[in-house]
Amino acid sequence: MGLLDRSGRVWRALSEFAETSGLDERVVTALHDVAMAGRVRRSRYEHAESLSLQQTQRNLRDLTTAQVLEPVGRTRARYYTAGPASHRRCSTSHARP
Image (cartoon, rainbow, N blue to C red; front, side):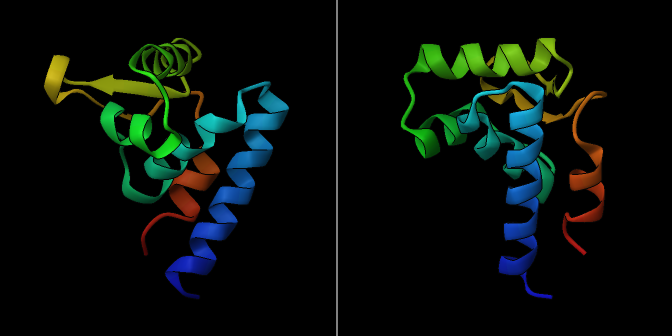
């Protein structure tokens, strides 16, 4: 199975997770990065979704509060990894081989 197939399966599973969890569909981009690469940075998510800084910070803060993501580092070096309540099936079974 190629990377695109794996990426598509992860995206669909995360979309389903976001929908059933009541999360905004635009957070799937951040969750997908975490599932495929192990982490996401605020700036990448902000640009990928064309969000304002405030929207990006609010979304990441909400995902952190819900324990879907976990912040690592401080200020400019901060990135987010899968949190305790994240959809671990996607981040473990569909991530890089």
